[in-house]
Amino acid sequence: MGKILERIHDPKDLKKLNEDELKQLAKDVRRCLVKTVSETGGHLSSNLGVVELSIALHYVFNSPKDKLVWDVGHQSYVHKMLTGRRETLCTLRKSGGISGFPKGVESTHDAFDTGHSSTSISAALGMAAARDISGGDNYVAAIIGDGAMTAGMAYEALNNGADIKSNFIVILNDNQMSISKNVGGLACYLDSIRTGHIYNELKTDTKKILTKVPVVGGPLINMVHSVKNGIKQLVIPGMIFEELGYTYLGPFDGHDIHQIIRALNQAKKIEGPVLVHLNTVKGKGYLHAEVDPTRFHGTKPFETSSGKPKQRSATKTFSDVFGDAMTALAEKDEKLVAITAAMPEGTGLSAFSRKYPKRFFDVGIAEQHAVTFAAGLAKSGFHPVVAVYSTFLQRAYDQILHDVCIQNLPVTFCLDRAGIVGEDGETHQGVFDISYLSHLPNMTIMSPRNGKELTAMLDYAALELEGPVAIRYPKGDAGMDDEETAFQPIRMAEAEWTRVGKDIAVIGVGTMHEVAVGVARELEEKGKDPSVINLRFIKPMDSRMIEKLFDEYSSIIIIEENILQGGAGSELSRLKSVYGSNTAIYAFGLKDEFIPHGTRQALLEAYGLTVQGILRSLPWQ
Image (cartoon, rainbow, N blue to C red):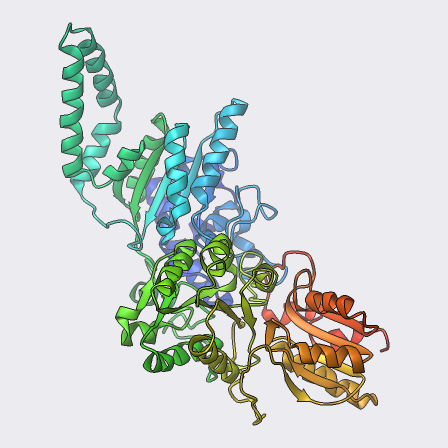
């Protein structure tokens, strides 16, 4: 660790440094980032890109009085280091350690909790409005970037900000994933003139003088205004923001601390909303991340010298299997198209995008648009597959309901990272999708227990079903080495009985089937004869299975990676009431609370979703 960084325990310590020391601090921070993330895993390239920006923000503003709202909060590691959490950075994303995202309960310097994208401008505008009502004098700044400007919510907030006309600052961290990358002395020069006291005073005085000129004063003002705007259209790249009502500053070099500090100080002097445009390099300062920023966007622990993962898995993940299945399926069905919201690598669609570029659409961070775009394709005779993380599909609930389900359109939603995700914490746990999708009419929901079943479900959804379908599967190993050879074909609303016994039935939803098998083995050793069922269809449930269970079994155990409210166990309990059965139901899922960060296995154990955890909770054990 560098000597300068060791001296930083609070943002106030930054203000004691000179410019050369600030530059050295940036080098220290980068070394610390690479070392830490190589051991903990996490978001590296985005944080390397905001080192100078983070330093400049805390040099110019006075947090926590001044509010700094980070968008796509995975770019807040440096901010955490500068606000008293450097020594705990080694606990990043570990159980009981610090979060990989801003968390107000963690520090007063984290002005707003962010995990999904494109929320910062709205939140910052709300804080600015609250300040104005309360008569406060603090600054409010939203730091947005890393693709977040592709989402409609950001533009809704920009539009509203121009109408409110409150003093607040939007800082666009442009790492070539959103707006153009133009930089240059002319732009810096123009901005220094436009925001300087002399220019603003001259503009005001000129308007006052021309207003007093009889008859022609008004037309002269309009003419000057038109000429000025015409010139601005030619030379100022941020004219769109000017037209929205923002004073645009930039673009500046986002790795030049002097330029950033000057731009932020200029922004503080301007009345009304301001947008500061900074060009940054994602992965800056670590060659492997600069060359491949996508791989180091969210990385597992790696060797710093080579950039290669410390542990390489030979097994296929569900994302890998999905990608292979999509590419194979596209050969059978020329109407199949794939849609993703800025996650082609994460969802496994990279190979598909290369082989079928005309049938692949990356819409950016715009899940709402992705769903309705898919509805338009479906309405026109195509079969779109929307590949999205479970947690991100939450953003498009209204579009699923109104634009897909009401019209009963054949859109297949493939929900990656369903269930407990792990280290990214509350905002990324995919534990709500069964609950928010199962009450939608026309929606079919399936969950595979392994990769082989995922491939079969995808084929069934794309080639045989006519309405909306959701297939949910978790992060990680797809269990392709499963030794069980028997595989029953996928049929509508039909569960798979993988062990037939009597009296007790253990139902596993998706990959929880493996836990169900383990529970059944333990019960068998205790003299029981349990059945094991792979549910497959969460909605609609297998009616023949339900009738048999309620007629012949005294106890049902059902295990799922979803919150209990509105989950598969909840639906089974509702059906029990309908049947008037006396069968006891023991539903195991997740509590009515947000799940913190930690390893997937540690969280499964903590929430009792393991064989021993379930056995301990059964009343007869």
